[in-house]
Image (cartoon, rainbow, N blue to C red; front, top):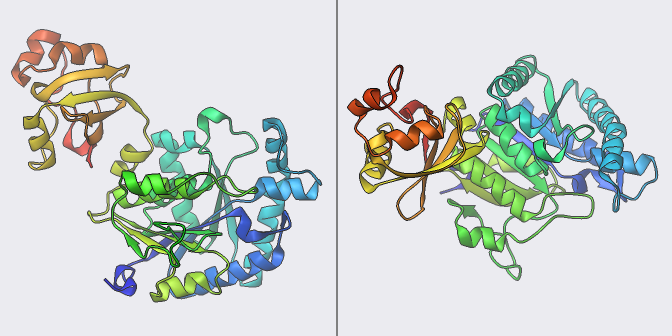
Length: 369
């Protein structure tokens, strides 16, 4: 399908800008940011909404304080981020003001998207900024974040931001031209419709000296995006007018296309923000009911459970051969589910007594892969 047709209904875009695109010799480059901002504003002037996810805070701080980013301790990196975030935002604000627009800063941690209330708060803030014509600039809160609540790379962060704002398109601007099936290929792959084991294997390792994201993190971002029924493009950020040309339909970089219908906000959150606390293995009849008949998960179809989960936690659903079927919010804790799995719904009251649910996972709280 022509690229222009794939993008014809795109309204809201998240643009992730890699560190290598906006730095020169380890320092933030005003000229590079200005060039990108001009391109972003031209896309906005065409009627699109744009959220920016920008790397570069640690490199900004390290550059101005004359520290080599390599070998920094975690507290030192957090200190560099605290200094660099101000520098980075000042550059973005200055460049956007030259174009007649204002920016708003949003700092997130993984904990902010895992928690439903904070997820919705972030969504409301981002939507309101866009409503006011302000360009949101998002980064991970590197100055205080710890390993347990850290995204780890801005490719993954940008995919979650795209979910938060229900973007139609995520564009990752990096120092690569796209996804290559083989490094000897002269051109990147044009289109990818599913992320299978071979794609993941060929994604390779980590990123550049100044960045944390390699192709593997970009493929993870693509997996999140296309499972939500949306689109993602990997393109080189130093291509002239790269964003404007992408929106016009030029075949730049690699596009990843979700084939299903776009998920609503709640199901996006369930799919990729909630951490799995356990596994529920189901029989073939239950697989049929969930995948093809669009039913809720009942206790009768469960053959095995594992993990430590409570009511309201997310669990992974697999078939008898351990193939992933989906994910959902469970209505029972692990001890209760051990008592009722394999039983008919009418038997639940006599086994558990008191208040109970007919479904182990309601269809509204269920994602099928």
